[in-house]
Image 1 (cartoon, one colour):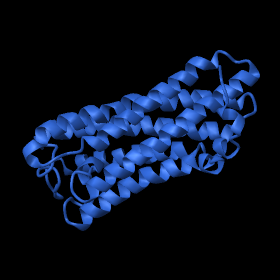
Image 2 (cartoon, one colour):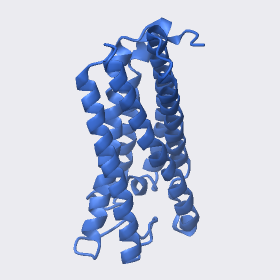
Image 3 (cartoon, one colour):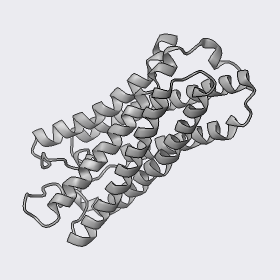
Amino acid sequence: MLAIVRWLPAISCSLLLISIVVSYSCAVGLGQVHPLFPKISLTAAYEPGGSIFSLVLILDVIATLLLISLYHLHVSTIAKEKGLVAWRALNNGALTSGVLLLFGVSAVACFRYASPTHADRSQILHYVASSFIYIGGFPCLVFNTILTYKIVHVGRASNGIFLLRMFITVIYSISSLSFVVLQTFCHNKYNRHDNVGFESHWRKGEDGYAIHVGGALLELVSLLALATYIISFHGDFKTFKVEDCGDMD
């Protein structure tokens, strides 16, 4: 069991990447979307890739929820050993925002784009679900990066890991915010219905095509940044001890 726990960051990261690759491969292979950086949500709107996407994403949520819960205990253990009560608020904030992020991911898996006849409803539900990813994602990365900085100063993490997580946090923040801005602008400016049957086949030369592709690329960058942040915990979990699962009261 402990061996599985130590591989949780790799498992979580792999499942996230698999969900993206499978939905893209299926949608492009079947000619359902344009191959040049379609939005991930759009590739997951079609079958059979969409159902596989949802299944893998839910498995990823379960693995990541276990990961952030155990990491919360891990940090609590260090804080208890060092007598650092002030860490509690940061640690709880990291866990709470992480749960909010995972709620958004699970909601996105459930509320995918549906058929064109239900596209408007699906669009609203999907956007609401997606908002939780960004609302929870930014503070989650910020809280964990600050915690990493503090853990470095008690000799339980390296400066390299802190710098990596700080860099990833900046990349995630810029790319996710830029994605939202560009996609909103593209949708409103060019009156593209952001649902199945309308946005799936942007063609080169169309007004807004470059902005659409740029926004979709930024979405991919933000998710790759998130995956990289997750795998950065591999070192923490490699030295994970059974005592870390003990009573933290």
